Amino acid sequence: MDSETLEARLRRVRERMDTAAGRTGRTADDVTLVAVTKTHAADAVLAARDAGIADVGENRVQELEEKVAAAGRETARWHLIGHLQRNKVRRVLPLFDLLHSLDSPRLARKLSSEAAEAGVEVEALVQVNTSGEESKYGFDEENALEALTGICVLPSLRIRGLMTMAPYTDDERVLRRTFAACRELQQRAAREVAGFSPDHLSMGMSNDFEIAIEEGSTMVRLGTVLFGERE
Ligand SMILES: *Cc1c(COP(=O)(O)O)cnc(C)c1O
Image 1 (tube, rainbow, N blue to C red):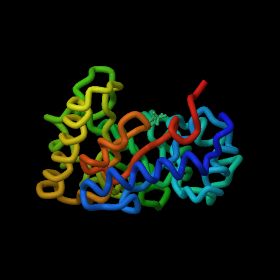
Image 2: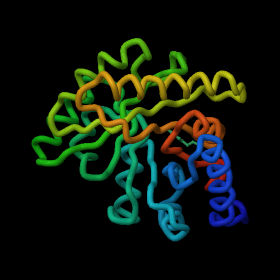
Image 3: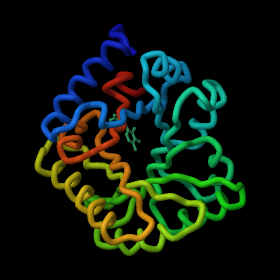
Image 4: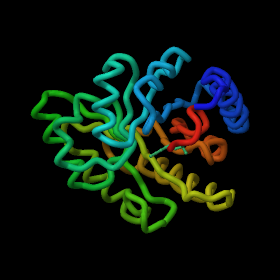
């Protein structure tokens, strides 16, 4: 990280969040900032906590395990934001508060059965691929509602919203379209899918978070803009 402090970066990010939220009649307090600490040492988690950030995101299971061990389970609300393999569900279940990347019915069934066995309820967002990019995980827009209908009835699994990732582009129309499609799916699911709780809409990264907030995001996942470029 360069010499600019996390506090200074955070202040500027919060201002930008506030301005974007204001355009939809909200404030920055209506949007949860998840600080993405992947590739950075566990110190980044402690620095985030000291700066007043309560939510931390990791995209890989092993790194989440290392950071939780080093920084402490109670130091933050931990978000697992990357693809999760089914064979890692059991060991990672106690380590996160919200999974953003539930991307298949098989993973949903595995989460449900492991959570039931452990006597806990697991909270997750269903990842949808509203950008249409082949390379992205998540349910296609066309299949998402049907998949959600099956997933939301599983025991010990609570679906609290949707997550999407936009393509890496500066084309504002493409970004808006991707985020708006996710918001519309969330609204439809709220009306049509029993058991679906439309609490969170996880959209927006360093490159596009203001547009995501303008399109209704309630949770942004920010790494670079807080901690600098990754190696
Ligand atoms: C790395 C990552 C982010 C944060 O990316 P930045 O561009 O550094 O803000 C957000 N979401 C997911 C799923 C990620 O893997």
